[in-house]
Length: 618
Ligand code: BES
Ligand code: ZN
Image (cartoon, rainbow, N blue to C red; front, side, top):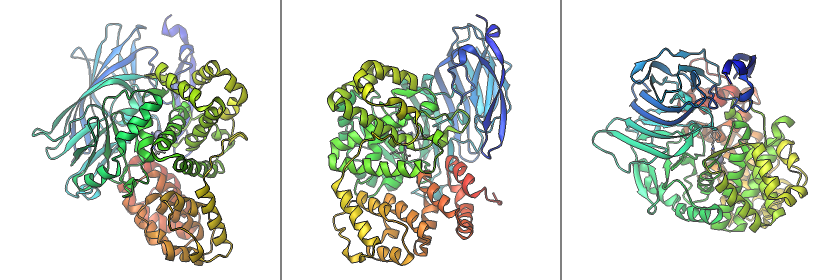
């Protein structure tokens, strides 16, 4: 059938932009495209990108990547147009078989960017796009030397999930499309470049690095970084990259990585990506971790010195199955990535550090969900959220732990052995394929009909809140912590708190279990436990949040320090939100943000702009 015959109508897709205005986007909608990703202009059902060859120069002075992307396409429907996603890209030339073609770059949508339309025909195989990125490309952060550990060399890092790959590579930027890629990257000679691909382990004289990713990946897993990096192996298939000043600490902190890989493989089958390396980034990285294939990107804020925060590695490693192998088809299916991964993370943690330990992490997760649920409208409390009209980078975090709890309920109902068999088979059957809520539900009903009968899966996936049959993780250690918190809040002395053997998780739980306290009590706790000076960033962040609830001035200098020395969105957002609650604190927040904003990644900037406003002097 001809495309024109399928054309239903021109419909207006109104997408809420950042400041809540709506910006209409005219989109051709077709019957066959009903399942298209609402966050991509591309039409992979017509013509599909199968392989990308990048050839890019990294220019720190211009804050620009420039060069070519050659896309090998398969056009089985005789489509006339290849539509790509771009955001802020300057397109210089498009050629097919060395001949320039007339392309069209549409007006920009505030969230989705601009569709790039390229004329193709049934014989088109390779399309070459000559382009340059914008200095404000939303995936990229260009760090001045002052923002690195070494203070001598600049640093470049990327964050493509959810829909930011299009700001540095023209592509079909939807997780429903997979491609392999090769790349040639030119960097200043003092720097090493790495990607989500087969990586070099040392610098070379030329500053030219070649990469190859042989397993097909979705665009959100495209990643690049360049800096003064060193490599240290853990064993023959894993190791860590970091700046020389950090490499020692990083290698010690994450030395359990090989054991985690082994545990993960014992649970859900072979690791399919050859190597698994870590990259420890400067503190402005906006996330805790990002599961870029073969090379997890990590915040240095988990370098606690005692391995207490390494469940983050278990999480990113688990994505090598849930997410990177079986991939959410659109961002409305996001919980299939993150809920599965959080469940898997807890299972790896249990295998390595024991049940008592993993139960504490389950409970910390539960506190998080409950707090976030209290702030969300019912429609945003489902696992299958509808984010079609919003920025997928703002999907509520509850899908992580709510999703994990749902899978734990399925495990408890099926029995662990049967459930593990189910999951292992699931990863095998759907490896390298997109997964939707509908496919998952059907598969579950077919594979475990009796389990589905006992559990109201519809309520879990599509309903709000935590259903009544939610599993109840148990930790005696945490129960004791809660008793101590209560006794202290009820008037007990700070010296009576029995905290000698508390792990950092117990400290976090203690702080989170406290009701709003008067300033004197906060000061008493600080006097004894020195929370304000904690070197554990989870403890510190929990304490600083509590301090803002109490408006405990003793912590304000530490709040300023924390907000100006790292850019992890999860740590920034709640503090700025609390500061925005009264005029005095808001003025303090604005002063800090004016200074800190240029040091944050665009992802964090976008979130904090919404909370305190964009500084005037920007
Ligand atoms: N894939 C996510 C990060 C992400 C999600 C980036 C959505 C952009 C859009 C990553 O695996 C993740 O979940 N990171 C968490 C850590 C985890 C232990 C909860 C984070 O960064 O806090
Ligand atoms: Zn994750």
